[in-house]
View 1 (cartoon, rainbow, N blue to C red):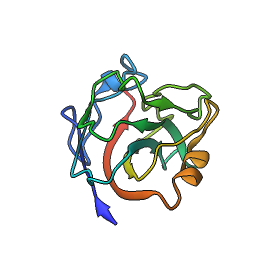
View 2: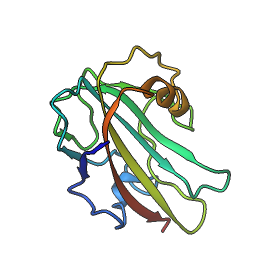
View 3: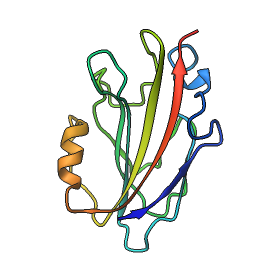
View 4: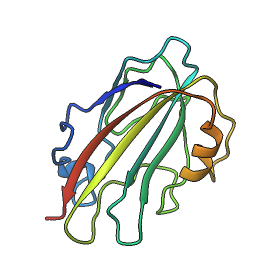
Length: 149
């Protein structure tokens, strides 16, 4: 599988996510820069989760049908064609880091798909992962950390 490049102008891989993107700030999604998208890509998908949550993996953001030519998802925004599913707060939006204790890791994963997906508003991470099976051309990962003030 090919590798996409994923970065953010707000933080580097393994560094702290700025508080404006968390529950201690404005809770706005960070800008995500995407590179090395395969030519055959029909859409992109994004998942953000926290594997360090006390009850296991906590999903913060689920997005699909991002246009394949997208090279930057803007801070606090998405391309109009993109669809958002349910996070673990049962919201169809970004929900920033808000760890109950300690420093947690937050993984932003972007997938290049050979199709567009026809999914409903109640789509959760597991539903998206099942729909993507057999359609992933490439993926990339960015990890940031956060500890509450």
